[in-house]
Image (spheres, rainbow, N blue to C red):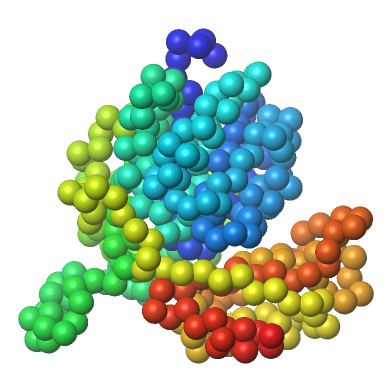
Amino acid sequence: MSDLNKVPVTIVTGFLGSGKTTLISHLIRNSGGRRLAVVVNEFGTLGVDGEILKGCAIPDCPEENILELANGCICCTVADDFVPTVESLLAMNPRPDHILIETSGLALPKPLLKAFDWPDIRSRITVDGVIALADAEAVAAGRFAPDVAAVDAQRAADDSIDHETPLSEVFEDQISCADVVLLTKADLAGAEGIAAARAIIAAEAPRPLPVVEVTEGAVDPRVILGLGAAAEDDIAQRPSHHDGHDDHEHDDFDTIVVELDEVDDLSALTAKIEQMARNLDILRVKGYVAVKGKPMRALVQAVGARVRHQFDRPWKPGEARVTSLVVIAEHDRIDAAAIRGALGV
């Protein structure tokens, strides 16, 4: 690649648990000869997604090309985190052919687009495309995209009801900023669910968008890489709830890290997580579990009450065998004592 050419960057956005890490893992393994680099923006202090992706490292995307930012939303810390990270990637030899950015599930993509106008980097990188992932089953259930007409009717009838929830605003901003929408977990939604999700996305999108059904992150890279969207020059066509604001906050959400000793029964712990999510309105749980008698570390991820787990790698020599879980919920729903009690701390 000539140094006169800008390095393309794909921004992968989507709500908590929509499958961003699974998608990027697939892209790493199917790079088509591209030298990839990945930036992972975690919400919280435990870098689960970054570790998962480092476990997928291959020669075209070695471990040193996978960088984590866990100090806050990258679009809020441009000078301190985002720009230096991009500069370090561009200084690599060989330089990456393509950079993937996995945003936090709580991130608003439009402020990140504005960061690409930063003087130190704007002549060297371009936003090849914004890919929004939407959980087909969740969207079909209307959890993240309320019917605007119905909400307006409620407001007319009851002045005490807010016009929208923070979750719906995040979802709508991600769809509005996208060049392509990937409808993930299509196998769980069924034909009716997929149709409902497509209708909701079409209603929220400010312009017609391609919507591609995806299961387990398996999508042909040619569908989402090489779009040439130059999205940083097209910001006005990507409306946001936060247009006109100088910045945005993530105070609507909060996170805590719960640490446990080794557990006797992984299934019993996942049952507790499922029950906790139902009872305490938890959005997301992710982390690692040390199971007594097992040489492998268990990776646990939950979206609402839907919990998945697998053993991902052996514990390293000298590594502390502890269980660490990140729990994320809306700010007013985070009750640390109740969460710790539900998990048996």
